[in-house]
Length: 71
Image 1: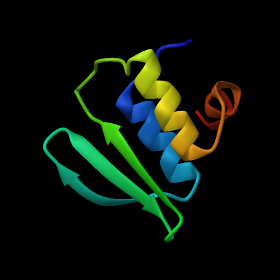
Image 2: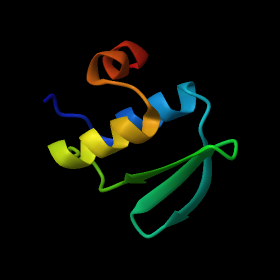
Image 3: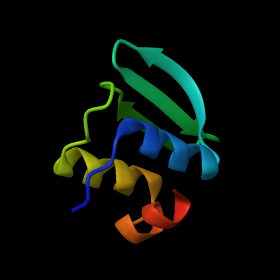
Image 4: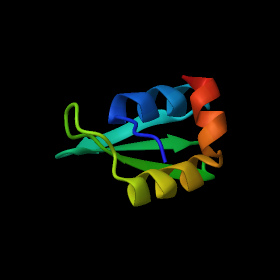
């Protein structure tokens, strides 16, 4: 699995129609309507761990190839 940073995932989420709902500590919570909630850990320039990335992609409803196309 490729490495992505939080900024990459936030960019993809915004392009998919998610908006920032709140931020607490190092986690940003994005929502899209009443249907989806997405939590992204924001730890500076560190890359997202593979299992965390897989969960975020599942929450976004996309796969890794679709994520690359959004960036």
